[in-house]
Length: 324
Ligand code: ACO
Picture 1 (cartoon, rainbow, N blue to C red):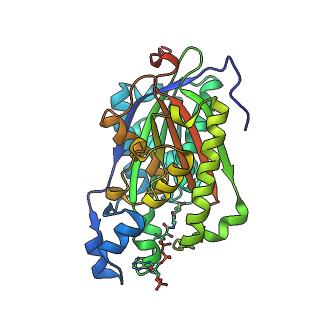
Picture 2 (picture 1 turned 30 degrees about the horizontal axis):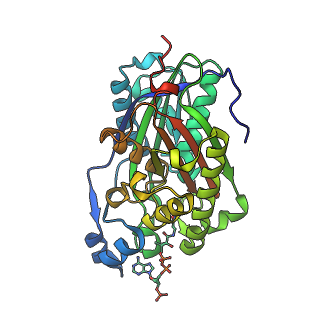
Picture 3 (picture 1 turned 135 degrees about the horizontal axis):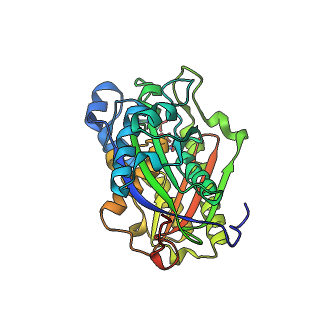
């Protein structure tokens, strides 16, 4: 991928929000449904509980509204809505159309399906639109995987769940927060993780695990190289929340200590497109990101896709002014 040309108009994140369905399914609940155990799930994945229920549009509206409120933005001033999801509510129209209407937006709206890398893909799209003249873009990542999970299959049922996270991006004068990015896909690996239309997720867990670590590390390394930064400069890494062992292995290979990782999967499970924004928002809400900090977002997913971005929080200097 090319490095970002100089002179391109940038953006910063000015608002964020999340949504999780109220229903919590614990590992002990799953023990009653499947031949599994709390201890096995925690040891092999790090997950203790997950939220299930709701629709992709419903959760997106909830997280999107919170992000707009935090940014203090009139919905009519949003120039585009990008919704990352691999579980749209219908084939047609895109779920973003339903969300656009419910939030009172009057702008272009489209879905992006890059599985668990989807939110990173959406963020790159949003920065591209801002470079082309848009001033305010709403990016949402939402998935309702419970609807496409076979609850009798212990290989997948212990991992997947539902949720949503959203951010508002606003244009700034000059370069913004995005220092480097990478998007990747390898269609030859699609057989390891897929769901037919109307079907449930099928997964070869071991193969996905093996590839996931490699492609996350490759993508993050490319983004850091494009940004001209090194791993020791990263203040926070926000990885896809699939499995704590995948996160630990990727951080170890990247030489980034686990204390710098944002991890929420113990309470959320794998929420695909929502997992990176859920972890990012949690870190932001807990004051883990300061102006000027370098944040690495890195995901992988079915496709097999990989994606990463290096953001400097608040833009260079940490205090970029948004355009009126
Ligand atoms: N409960 C209890 N035992 C289980 C379960 C379960 N839920 N699932 C499998 N087992 C058993 C297996 O049958 C096996 O038994 P055996 O040794 O007698 O044959 C044993 O536990 C070990 O199974 P493994 O598959 O080797 O377990 P592993 O350590 O690889 O963990 C897991 C499995 C958690 C699925 C792991 O491989 C993984 O996380 N893979 C990546 C999955 C992933 O990230 N998917 C999402 C991609 S992103 C997206 O786009 C949605």
